[in-house]
Image (cartoon, rainbow, N blue to C red; front, side, top):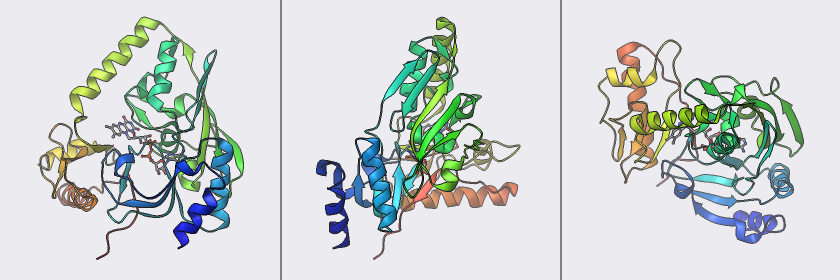
Length: 306
Ligand SMILES: Cc1cc2nc3c(=O)[nH]c(=O)nc-3n(C[C@H](O)[C@H](O)[C@H](O)COP(=O)(O)OP(=O)(O)OC[C@H]3O[C@@H](n4cnc5c(N)ncnc54)[C@H](O)[C@@H]3O)c2cc1C
């Protein structure tokens, strides 16, 4: 009854075609796991996004932000309340050495726009499969570059639906951390600043990083990328590899034989398989090296109840 009521209310805010009830989140997450969202909503404008956030706050409906689902594991029981996605807010605009991108644009598209316009600084993100919003929340980075290096400012909504602009310093970007994740802000858009570069060097860098990624990561399987953060002074993948865990797992989930930091879904994994594999890895690495592997991926939702 409550879900129907929320859906009716939301239909006054967004196009009813963009509201889905009891929607499977498997399609929207790169692990291809997990249960359903009570309500899944896709605003098409920033005004609609603001109105949905305000509605959830005022009616005390749990609201979960889903980006491109590349760092998210949804439990098998799914997510109660509203799951919101900004994938329809995907404008990318170039202005000299600046790029404005909305939250739902893919970070690799922004990287491609920079490269295509001879701008350097964004090459590191050419293979990161997240959205701008997710990349901001996680301070995404790869091969020595990170969002922190190129960000100017970011416009967010607070939980109450107030729109604020955060400067680079106010974003508190650190290794896979930001004020956005801490305060549960909703990213609307970001401004990035790059430099004019040499087209050939940019193209070579992108080709090199693409080759490295494709040869070292199990991109042929669903996964959430690197499951664990890098523990200070170590590499999570190396600790897992040295623990002999590659190829091991629970049910349809397995520690990748190609990259030990990745846990793949071989096709039929449940979220429970995936999470139990994560826990098995954490337990074994703790026993072997006395190191706690902290999660980089976000695990959300509820377990199945019988
Ligand atoms: C094959 C593969 C390779 C990867 N390689 C890298 C890599 O090299 N470097 C790297 O850093 N990451 C990597 N990742 C992880 C992932 O792509 C990044 O963390 C990315 O930034 C997540 O973005 P997303 O839009 O998919 O976020 P999601 O997975 O949807 O969400 C992640 C978190 O961000 C929050 N979030 C999402 N959108 C918003 C928003 N608009 N406002 C506020 N919060 C938001 C979510 O609530 C959640 O807490 C990889 C993942 C895969 C599957």
